[in-house]
Structure formats: C-alpha cells, structure tokens
Figure 1 (cartoon, helix red, strand yellow):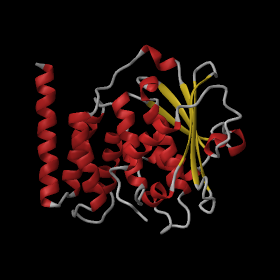
Figure 2 (tube, helix red, strand yellow):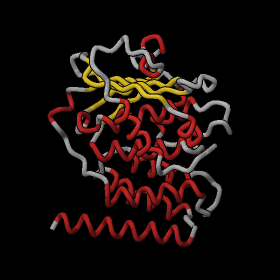
Figure 3 (cartoon, helix red, strand yellow):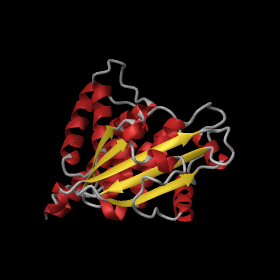
Figure 4 (tube, one colour):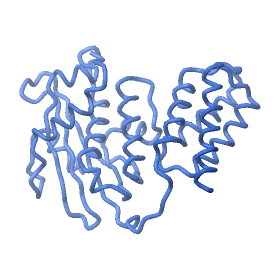
Length: 268
C-alpha cells in the first residue's frame, strides 16, 4: 500500500510539473506550493540532482521576475521528473565510515603534438593505499568537443572530464561509499559542488556527474588540493613515477573517454 501511495504521489507531481512546463507560467503561490511537494519527494531520493532542482524553484519564487518560466528552471524541472522515476531511494549503509579518496588532474599544452592534453587519476582506499590509477592523452578530436580551438584554453572542461572519468572507471569500487574528490582547479571544484554551470560542454559533464552520483549511491565531497600535493598531477603529464600500482590500460581509459564524450556536440 505504501509503495502504491508513493508511486501515485510521484505521478501526480510529474503531472503538475508537466502542467507548468506546458503553460510556461509559475506564479509565486504556485511556486511555493510546488516547492513544498518537491521538498517532500526530495527527502526520499538519493543524490543531489533533485535538491538542485528544488533550489531553482525556490530562486524563481523569490526572484520577483514574474510568472514566466525561464529556460534554466524548465531544464531543472525536467531533471526533477527524471529523478522521480530513476533515482535510488535514500538508504544508510555500513560502509559510510570507510571513505575513498579520488585525486584527478588535467594538463593542457595544445602546442605539444605528442601530449596536447592529458588526464590523470588516482584512487586511494581508507588506509591510504593506492588501489587504482589512470593516465591518458586527449587528442585534438577530443579537445574539439571540449571547445578548443574556439576557446583558447579548455583546462576547466578537461579537469571536469578527468573527475567524471575517474568516477566512471571505478564506480563499482565507489558504490555505496563516501568519497572525497580532490581537484586542483577552483572552477572545477565549485561547479562540482554547485552542480551547474552556464557553458557547454561543462553543463553536460556536471549533469553526468550528478547522475553518476545517484546511480551508484555515491556520497561525494569535493575539495581543492594544491598542485604540488596532487598525486594525479604526474599521470596527467605522462609521468607515472609517483604511482605504486599499475595504471588501467590506456586503451580502456580512452574507450571510456569516447563513451562519455560521444553524446556531446563539438564545441570547437
């Protein structure tokens, strides 16, 4: 009975969101009422994506810009609908006191034909032992998808891709676990925390990051580490001297990069 009631509430909330998207209008009283219903649903769902959608409705309610639904709010309402049907329910696991530590980094030297851009990552277990690593090169075909040469630098996008790549490669190890994710790029850290950005392909990358968190039940904490202390810095530059383990074969890593980027349109 409880499951049926939950499914009915989810269907009714989805129908209300469809009504808002169809009309393109969301007045303040309706926004506040919708926020209350979304807040209840959000408490039952794993991950951060649904919470970010809730924040968008709250911001709209107090923006004073009128009832018209802006594009970013429409986007997050659609994301929330997906969360209602696809996200995992909240749960508590015994492994929450055993965090992993994920270090990722990117290098960007477009004038160097042999290594124009590199991604590196190292996964460390709760005892401080390296358990996995990767080091791969991004050729110009990948850099074009990230926005180069239309943009003079795509280090932010590359850093965000490295973070998503590490989670994608090792999601089985990270499933149901807390993970501290260390990056040495402030923009990457801030976007990962906020769960949004205004540019492409950054928005697609961060939305995939949120979806992956939800999929594997990952409780992530994002922090900055100085480059000199980032053990992924060397692997991003084709230097494996700091690794105590054999990295994942580059062919497999490149296949994962292709899988991630295959659905993005070229920004170059």
